[in-house]
Structures are given as structure tokens and as C-alpha cells.
Length: 169
Image 1 (cartoon, helix red, strand yellow):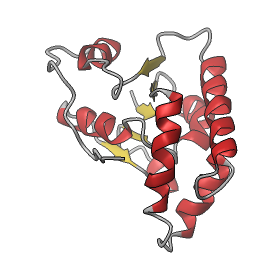
Image 2 (image 1 turned 180 degrees about the horizontal axis):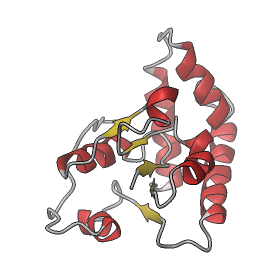
Image 3 (image 1 turned 180 degrees about the vertical axis):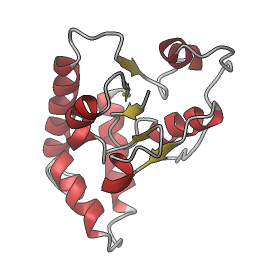
């Protein structure tokens, strides 16, 4: 079984990845294309998964999908400062991917708000009749590891998620 994270940036994707690694899954955070479709890992997380999740679902039957979310307004408030820190980066693949997902490589309120709504609707519509294959979890909003562990049928969850990649903004 593979596990794929469908969360947008700043929704707890690093925490999800690190939590899965702690219980023994070889999950790749921000995979390249080869890693995403490889048989040599247990899955992947972050926005490189988003354009391909339907292909991955068909290519890896019985996979589980974890959609990390947070309050939309809080997410919008965090994305501007987060992406400003990346403005000087020369990594065109990340800029191209952000343009594909969000409509712009750097924060534009209206485009990012629309991208949030579109992604949320797409994911929920795609899995509407498959509740056993999709977990929607708000790690940053207080959901506990038990919710993830129950979904994956793992015993002995910790009381709280660890904190990885936590920023002030």
C-alpha cells in the first residue's frame, strides 16, 4: 500500500511525512517525477503529488490518500510571507509547479484563494464514494495523530504530532 499526501503548501505536509517515516513508511516529501511513480518507496507528499494523484490512484491500487488542510483564511495569511522568502530561489521547476497548482509562482490573493477552492472541491469530489481511501486531516488545527493512525490501521499513536518545518508565518 502506498500513501500519498494531497495537501497544499503550509498545511502540515512535512509533519505528515515525518510522522509516516516515524512509523516505518518510506515516504518522499516533495518528490521528483521519478520518485513519485517509483515502486521503491511507500508514497509521497506535498504539491508534486497534486497534478498526478488520479494517475497514482489508478497506477497504485489500494493506495491511501491523506488530504492535509487548515483554515483557508489562515492559509492565505501564511502563503504570502512563505513565498516571499522563496522569491530569490532560482528553482524553475518549483515556480512552474506553483504556477500549475496556484495559478502564479508567487502569492496573488485571488488566484491562491481560487486554487484552494478548486483543489478542495476536486479532491472531495474525486473521493466522494470512497471514504476508506481518503482522510481529511487538519494537523495545524488540532487533529490528533489517532485520526491518522486509525485511518492507516496503526496502533499506539502519540498524543500529539511532532513539529517539523514550523515557521512563525
